[in-house]
Length: 172
Image 1: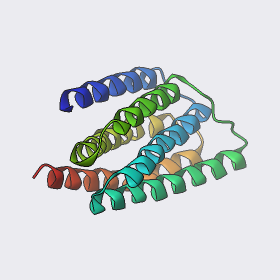
Image 2: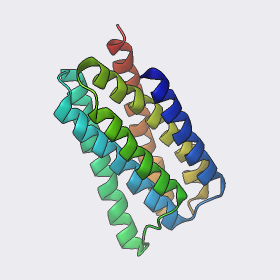
Image 3: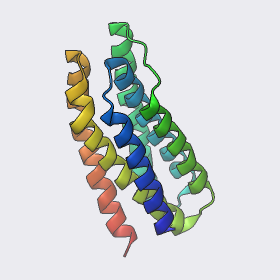
């Protein structure tokens, strides 16, 4: 199980890194932001419905609430700016890998489910932070889009730390 998660995470990181290395425009950044949040919302909904661990359920609800809020802000901003999110290799890869993660999680129950979900959340949030820092903020041309990315970054850092704390607790 741990090996498949490592392979999955490595492939996701490679796909995202390769796509982001090509540079992205504001419309593509908007699509990446919305897709990345949607992926975490979907996994959070599954975890909230499946887990029997109160801490995991609470974390999953936080992911649903916070990432829904970011998507709402992003959608309002792109509507205001009259920017249509543009599908791109990164957003497509995020969506595909997110669907694979949910499918894998659906095959698990109990502690194996909780560990797989939280392990993925740790890796996923680290990847998102890296993408925000290395590509999305530097490549964003619109100052309001860049400001939104800067504004939401601390929440992703907090999510990562929360997930790491849960990961540590689950491994005991």
